[in-house]
Length: 271
Image (cartoon, rainbow, N blue to C red; front, side, top):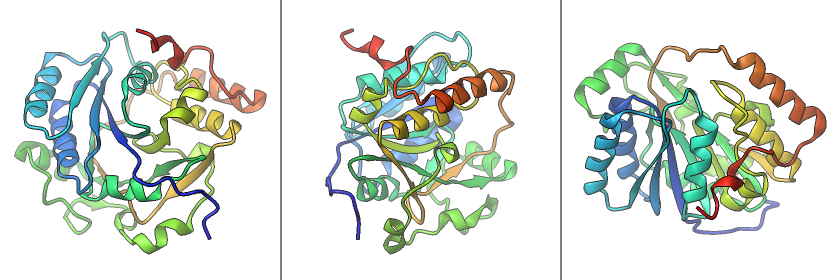
């Protein structure tokens, strides 16, 4: 028996974070437009890419049945927390599904997230990994429409099983097991926590810290499994130069039980 009150048919804003990889973003947006349940909008949260990305977004927006909005700020280093906050502040949907711009979505990805959404909770999912060879092939073809669990070059295949009747059986999950490339949350819950902490600069831990603050606000972390499937394109690991400083911020939130951050989303309202 589900302990959450049903809140059917959330208005989904799909938020896609990107930085200077338009080939991957093209595959991501193609898969978003093939969804069996379309979002009310697609927000491309762009951490300072060059004009090539802007031109791609404009081309795809011209053929999209839903608005595709390019949310951009200048390139001043890795500021993923800040550009996600800008996009969330601009969103018109009441439910934010968050992915990265190097993800290919299963056709029923958004339908599964909509079915799994419950008030008082946020969600994180898992991913399948693609090999470098398979990734290169998809980028060269500009087409991932035939990608499936059984395609060559796919790893972690158990994460690709779609068994809707099993999805509701998993609930509580640790905040520090969050994957920012596949998350969903109610916009009002994110605003209450003041969004992402923009003190996080560089790769690492900003999604864990947000999850901790959501949990401190009484929002339960739920894991979606056997649905909301994504395929992650291969890329080399990001620079980890900022990890030590970011983990220190994370541990401060854990130790002090913060519910809000100081440098967050509130600065973008009223603009």
